[in-house]
Length: 235
Ligand SMILES: Nc1nc2c(ncn2[C@@H]2O[C@H](COP(=O)(O)OP(=O)(O)OP(=O)(O)O)[C@@H](O)[C@H]2O)c(=O)[nH]1
Ligand SMILES: [Mg+2]
View 1: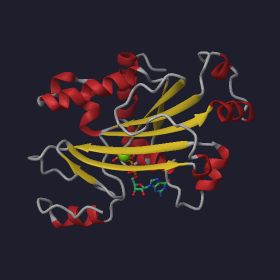
View 2: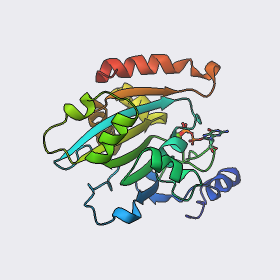
View 3: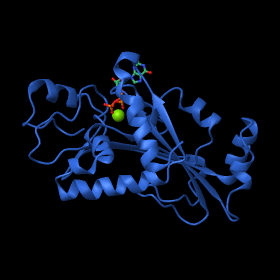
């Protein structure tokens, strides 16, 4: 685990010491975890490493879900669950959804001179951009669709030669969400580049999902959701 940085006050340093492992980057703080099915390591799985990858290799069909919600509603906890292989319930989850490989990235964008705390409740950093990516084989995904009575079009409308299905959950929050809604808020060119990448990710979204921890605190959420839906043609 990274050592708490000296620039933070004692309270923030204490929170960071309880955080899921994180790295300090030029653009901020990143938490990552990954999982890969041990019995199927020989299967060639699409590359999941980059937090920004919007395209996957030929033969992959991608479904993208945007997760929005109140602060500390548990969004990152949900995203992280797909890689949390040490948890006693992970086997239950992976039996339900037969994942070949999964990846979790949680990012808080804070430049060197920014002394704001990157966390307010451990173990996850306050999210600007978070992402969970799950890969399933075409055969396992078809079984999942059939077992759960989902629309056969999920399979039938896939391009010929689809061998993987990739499910992505994107979590957008904090300043990053505000910057996506209003480009005039962006001053730093590096943030502009990151926001542009997130815009690109948003254009590939299939569905918007809202999580709420507290109805009173959610007043801003419907408006945010409406604006994002209009801007990015989400449903
Ligand atoms: N009681 C309870 N606590 C939860 C649950 N899910 C998450 N938490 C806790 O709630 C806190 C915030 O969780 P996060 O997953 O970081 O929430 P978030 O929505 O990603 O927060 P932001 O990125 O800051 O908006 C952490 O302390 C979690 O351990 C849950 O289902 N029940
Ligand atoms: Mg989060």
